[in-house]
Image 1 (tube, rainbow, N blue to C red):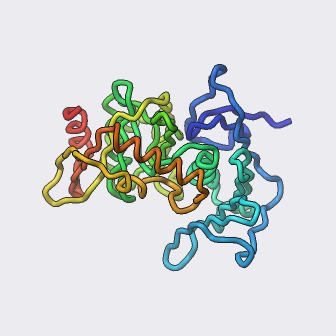
Image 2 (image 1 turned 30 degrees about the vertical axis):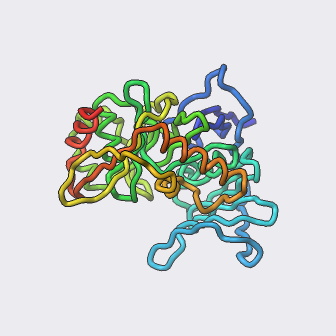
Amino acid sequence: MASTLDVEAFGLHVRLPAGLLTAPLRPVRDGERRVPTVVTRSPDPIPVWDPSTVRRLRELLQDGRVIWSVDVDRNMRLQICAPGLATMEVSPDGLEVTCAPEGDNADPHWPALIIAQALPFAATLRGLEVFHASAVTLDGSTLLFSGVPGSGKSSLATQLVLRGAGLLSDDAVAIDRDLVAHPSTGGIRLRDAEFARLDQAARDRLGVVSTAQFDGRMIGSVTPADPAPVGALYLFEHDSQGPTIEPVAAVAPILLLGATFVVASIQTPERLGRHLEVCAQIAARVPVFKLRVTPDIDAGMLAERVIACR
């Protein structure tokens, strides 16, 4: 019988084949064990669903080509398909994830899609809200950084980790109804230009993995931080007059709805109600700031400003 690993990701107890994921994951402690989401690797290819029989929820296109897509069938199963990489299915209750690479010559980094897509969907189905944000812990609370891809969230998180913060995620973080943020993995993906700015000492501290991933460079071996309550939310905005950090006096919950990871994909009444509830609680209880930055901002200087403003 193949060995398995019990870890925590996106607020879930996840059981998966040992060695399937290489990014650092937080082990599940004995007192935290609960009904797991079980990830299995299928020995056979997973047939891609006939598009005429399912409903497409999301897709990412590049030069007119589908990079990945998410479909739902009549039984509310989800299928995530990334042509040339892998196909994955998530059960309607989020308790099972089945995955398989597409052929013997698939990109060896295909398991990264488990963290990037499958487990965020499973967490949402199991009652958490997953925000498209980088997150670190500092002084016992979580700092969330939300913005469009390429706005600098991962770079800022990296620089905060180099200054003593704990890493929850560089891309997506799960939040429960008590507004506690939960880690995904200890990996950070940086664009080449930002990676080049790190000196050797910083790379050594972060445990750089030199192999390039299909979605950027992976910087591994950062131990994921423990869950922590959300203490502040920073909304990235590009501005030629940046950098500035401005408190938002009154936050409309609708401002936060678009920051959730699967906002348009799972629209059951229960999920939509929970979605609104969590966003309303953040708006009412969590300090929110606009983080105005220039495209060429020095992430180290920005990290210093975030720390100084706390």
